Image (cartoon, rainbow, N blue to C red):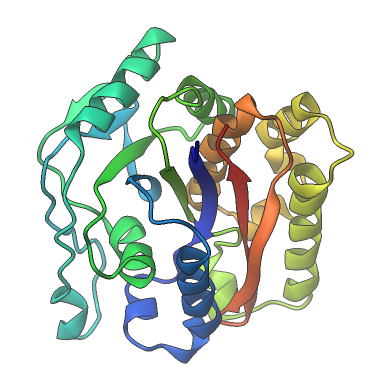
Length: 269
């Protein structure tokens, strides 16, 4: 049985990947090839950097509008359509899994899909015919809590489900706009740490987990993530890999606006 995949992806800067921005070409190509390399999912669960709530919240809608949660772009950036359906049954099952471990989840009935969801999915699955469910981050961005959220839904019985953690492995807009001396080296140090912790087969699962909880101690961690909302979707993805406890693989690496980012993948058990 194909149980699907768990993927931590970069989604780029606002709508720029959909506006033919050449600084996003590598990411656009990577996401499109990623979709082609997988069987069409039965549904997609997205944990986006751009939705934070007081407790874990699952979007239970049967249809979706788009939430254009950015500003200052040309009109084209506000004219996108992505009429993918929702999947209330899947949303309810996720809610139940979170409730079983005492995480006090909530169901959301009105919010649209933010750009951390629709931008990558427009690139990956432009036909908009795969059901989408979104799960929020929790305010405070506690890394251990988000690993626990992933573990809670790791046993979700939904064949060929694709889980996407949508963020960026580097997210320091100020450093992208005006790179300080040594920025590329700092970026490399953090990505080398990610590779060691998550991709190396020699690191036990519990050691990986402890390192992700203490991610601020990683080399250049706060340079790469002055605020960690774009990293924390990775923690949910990692928690979901608890069933197999296998290392991640690098699906692709690229540069966005001159800055290295990575895409990591696990198979669902």
